[in-house]
Image (cartoon, rainbow, N blue to C red; front, side, top):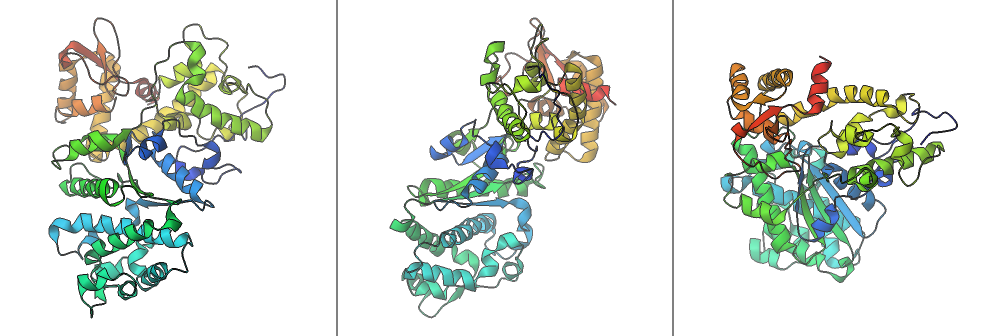
Length: 489
């Protein structure tokens, strides 16, 4: 779409790559931008409690959207728990039962967050049970406000005061005796769970929904650290228990957002790992086969960026093609073989964050609309550096910095050779002192692309489930974004 009047990208805000950065910006926030294109909510309602996907696939965006949606909504209450909010190593030292350390801590987190949300509803304040829960909360704020970094009470093994609960929940006395009013927090888990399930079954809560969400679990996570793997599987196992047993039939859910590369590398950590993931893991995938040019506006990623563009255009009163705002943003008039949209996607891993990284800070540029092919290539050049930074961040879960530097040396050499034979790839990996298993990791992350020798077909694991044939039957090249990156070095 050509404009009669000259418009530029100056002030055209279409969002941030990080969902947390979109809560308030330029009068627009995540509620304006977000739409659940990949049907996460629908699958959570079906019983999936694990939401997995590559870094940048929209896991945190969904969690933040639900969190923002709950504000001012009397029928929805949410809590996001992030790994960097607490010092788990310090806390679990207070739990003597070695085999239950991680499970006990995670279950306590779930329960106390639910206590807070139940009280935040303001429902049933006239009921003795709710008053007892409020008194319990007040007497044990240090244990319940773990999100405020108040961990000293747990580390010091201070006991939980459950005296307010004895008045209206008679089974407490049967558990601890008539005279006891305190116990370590891990001994209070089962009684508190029973109390919460009783409360959630009350008529006053039948139309209110509660979500406890675990996000950013990859922070300081090392797949080479067995304890990190055990912690994560303990969280997954206890969350399954709440989904299938304790909260089954109740309006309360525990959701885990996890990177798919981490999930795939938990095999062998727990005997039920694959059974759990096969039954309860919903994996986000934005890839769709492009059938023809005319269908591009219906693609999920096109709809994702179009929603943001329309909000930005509306805010600046810039006229645009409302059926497909992209056509007012990028010049698609000179496409002989492929569209600009397809050209751009070929530099991505088919993730919404990739598009946001390409157009990051576009509002601070003064590029004439619609953007030309030259403009697009300049943006892709900037994007390649940002994307490499994200890839390096992903690899931190497996490798140290020195090994990651060597991996990019390997990828640079392969990029210089273009389609490289399998044995040559292994020799390059060995040359830089890396184990040959690095090859599999690079293919898993789409940093090495298998190319079928006869047809030239490229295999990406977000669109093909598995390769046909042996590694030796393919040559290998780096993805376009890395080629663009190495050109700038």
